[in-house]
Image 1 (tube, one colour):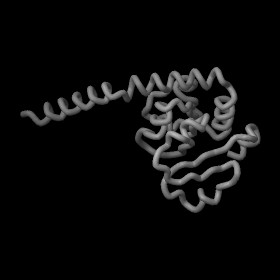
Image 2 (image 1 turned 30 degrees about the vertical axis):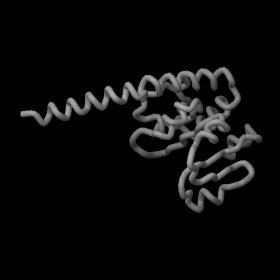
Image 3 (image 1 turned 90 degrees about the vertical axis):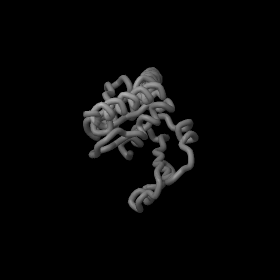
Image 4 (image 1 turned 90 degrees about the horizontal axis):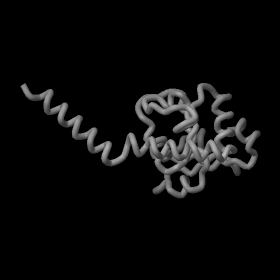
Length: 153
């Protein structure tokens, strides 16, 4: 964040999540808000311009990223954060390979209104195509059908 703040001095970084460790709580400052647990994220989605997923390691699908995308918050993610989602860089999200590229992409997405709007639309379309109720229902029926077929002699 210090590298981002040098280029965007009025930018604030908001950290939301239950029981932040002491190392995170100590980051709190006028430019870093450590909100901790919140009942609803809507107010943060309404106030924030860029969602960041600076994962360095991990597995699985980032449900927080999908939720932010569905709420219209364009994101910058690491390659680890994008793994398994089939996102295309500069379409549904900006995907960074290293710290320097991450900073550059956050700043670009924050400042470039045209890029921001294009990524927002593409991300919301992606979520509708991949995670709508109808799509998830169809996938569940297919999975259950496959499971039943596997159990039948």
